Image (cartoon, rainbow, N blue to C red; front, side, top):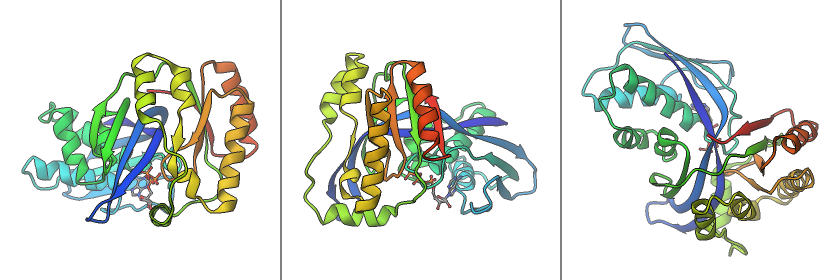
Length: 283
Ligand code: ATP
């Protein structure tokens, strides 16, 4: 079985409050894009799940989210584990705020479910995915959606009008726990206009959405990283992006374009800043 796992971008990301269980209540608009990992699944009959990827530092066994998804799937079916080899060609940058691991997990759920003649609906599959991670349910459904709670409470939204996204992952990484700790200790100066962005989506207004791209984590980045993210966003805007923002807990920055030519030029320009720069479309 071959299946693609699409990356996600956060069109908006807001942190509403810290919950008694230690998690945060979030509100974010998610969008899947054509940048994708490729997974090949092969049944081996050996009763073991093995994962191979082209990145040596990723886990190969049950620590890999793709393997966890397979185990949860069989558990939900009331079956014991089957033998499965999962080969992943990683294209989605790792620890980048693009949900790569969650998307791989969701792709495994979809592949196994299709293989078995769809015993689970998409919604049921999303609930199984929630046991692997809060972003997995969204990755099962894909498209444009409002995600609330830990990210698992989903409301599908009208598709973002056709556009191009230039995605650039700068060379540093960001600690997600550190960013959440920082956000708890400051008063946010700016929040995304999520309602306005939803209305713009409902009106099919790409410019209205692009103008409202915003992620509260940008405000709490350490100084040097914030400056770098700001520079990359400015470069994208300078190249004609309708709007630009950071995705997830970063550090990936992206810009939206309504035309392909400026998007290609922006891709070429940003490639000089980071080799992990991609031109993609929304899915
Ligand atoms: P998010 O946007 O959901 O915060 P992320 O971009 O920060 O995701 P990922 O790249 O999805 O992070 O995952 C990073 C962590 O998950 C790494 O520590 C990695 O070892 C682990 N991991 C487990 N399975 C995978 C996988 N299939 N692909 C990528 N990372 C994986």
